[in-house]
Length: 249
Length: 303
Image (cartoon, rainbow over the protein chains, first blue to last red):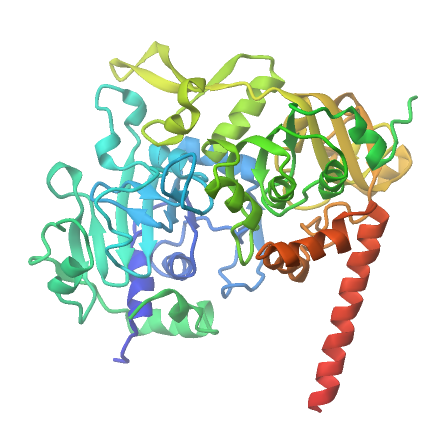
């Protein structure tokens, strides 16, 4: 058994987001998640659809940044239709996430006079109310996991109005960080530890999160990559080791 | 048959202060930058801008021409990603932001194109989008039952435009035009949502040649959708207009870095933006030539 790096553990944890996903479009917005999505397709989730980051659906599963044969067309207009249709799982980054999974990638500070401007809410409001949404955070810290987010871009579980059926597709699924894997199956849909990566202690997560993370003591240990998975990551998906740049160890 | 061609500067004389303008493309992709530069040469101000934003919004903000912006994001699509002038406008409170989900923007253009007051969309519910819009954005309750209840949805208002600007790869003098890249973005909707429709083209060719050179489904725009045509080679620079050219990453970095201080920005404006489009393109060619010369000098020196 070869030893796996933290980045490789994270990539496999991201791949696990798409286990049993079936024939849906997976939209990874960062490097680690892209590695995970390609790994999932090459192993246990062969049916997922992936784009090249532009409008081409990839038939091949090439290395990050490499071209490959395509199987279809997915321009932005069709992405909007697909996400409203629900056949999609997006994994976005986040500048802030709170205990209910509210996410901010828009700006810090007041709405009309922010202290720092990022992208804007992008597709986060539409993603989160229409289909499975997960997040990747490479630097698990109190700054990211705060008591509240400045601008709710992706909606969290506390925003769900049970009297309004329009919220019935909300599925804020999981957060994968450099420390562990989390979901929102704690009390009142609060964040809960699913597993901590090998070598990560519960205290380390608690010390780097502003709110209580449920089930920290009973969390499992994130599984290690198999030898086959490591070979795929090293040789096929990420020969340039881009994975290490996105993970704080 | 009418020839709709004119010049960039003549085209933008019909744009007045206070108008609402839509800008096609997406982020730093196939933006009608030659039109944006032409707007920078006018005295127009207090614009409301609707855009899948990139350096188009950034440059208009740099000249203080934007009063209000309707956008889902503003992105340079490649490092440094965040547009410096949009960030300055936002953090100084210089512009009023009507931020929204990306899908909402298309929905608002569709409503405008169909002459509807609004279209329903799920996106936005529960998020701070509604707070960004104040009283301007409302919800609507479905008259049809869903799961025993009634869905309350965002009533996305029509984003009706006084003018729209788009840039395509090839077209004719009457305004039939094709995109030859991979994504149409929402250029057709921008044109259909607008009163005055401005199209810039990499190449203007005879209609027969246009029809021979692209598959029919690439003909995104027909002449009903266009009032004014301008031939503007390299007119999307420094954004991409693939397959004609890719994004000029070095120039985009120069733009972003120049925004760092008053002095460097003044130099950027003086070198690139203070004169005509032809002067801009000449300065860009010089930038590329100097870069190539510097690179070969460096490589020669290390041998």
